[in-house]
Image 1 (cartoon, one colour):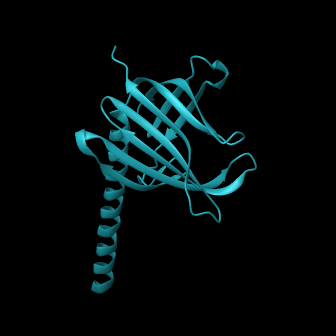
Image 2 (spheres, one colour; image 1 turned 180 degrees about the vertical axis):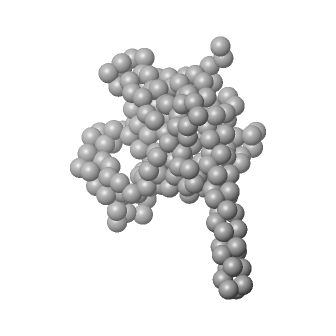
Length: 172
């Protein structure tokens, strides 16, 4: 009986330690994204699969946390292409392992206090919807913010840069 009690106590302690560690990971990501809340201006460059050429257009972004949640709104505005405007909701999982459906691959501190976060997911991309691994790289800084989507099609060995957003912080 004493042995069973000890096993249960050890198991409970391991569970608490695991949950505490998961909460720390989630809080780190939430804090990372809270640092980039606000208004940003810059540009989107994306690969047009039809022509095979990159296309660049101006872009603005507002990032704001939904109060008391693990969610952030990304309000994308394209001044010259209003029909492309959209709002995305980014959700950080409670265990800190996912941003939306994308698995956290790495979180690396960079010079000047910037942070690089890389996520990946399996999905489809391209005009014909080919299976692919999709990698998202976020660079979060006090005055700059960027996201880059890279695609590795099934059976291929070369990553393709699908698009990149590069922003500078707007000062109110």
